[in-house]
Picture 1: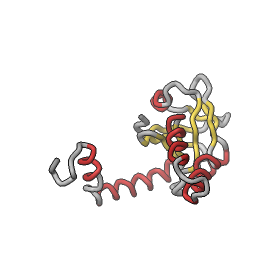
Picture 2 (picture 1 turned 90 degrees about the vertical axis):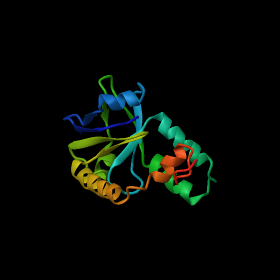
Picture 3 (picture 1 turned 180 degrees about the vertical axis):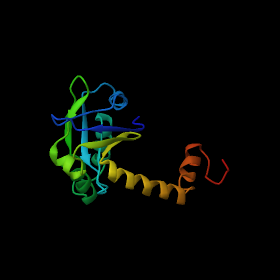
Picture 4 (picture 1 turned 135 degrees about the vertical axis):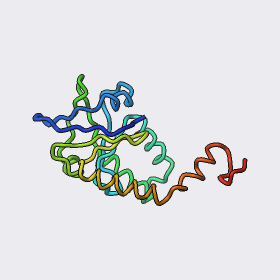
Length: 158
């Protein structure tokens, strides 16, 4: 699981050190996949082979000509890159992806459960504020899924 927020920066050779906890979540893999977030949120999103296999499974269940499939395949697979890390956990993120996310030097690795995101710190501060406000204004938004996960109907009954 990708958890926490970790500061990082692009070094003089154009590399970033992937946080050790994120490398652990990648289960020892020396590569990960990275793509601009589809919603236009201004960050990069990525994960390991498990995440890409999940997408592949979802998209394989849609008709090849389905516009939603095409749009999402374009967003994730066509606009993405496979990133390789060296033994020390350093990786080169392609310049086009860095530009897409507005990252010049400083960045944040942000855990997002089964995936992670890479943000420009200023953009993330605004996003974090928006998401905190949303969570505060919608405290019951997770009630039904929570109770369903317990095998209850969301109304307190079983």
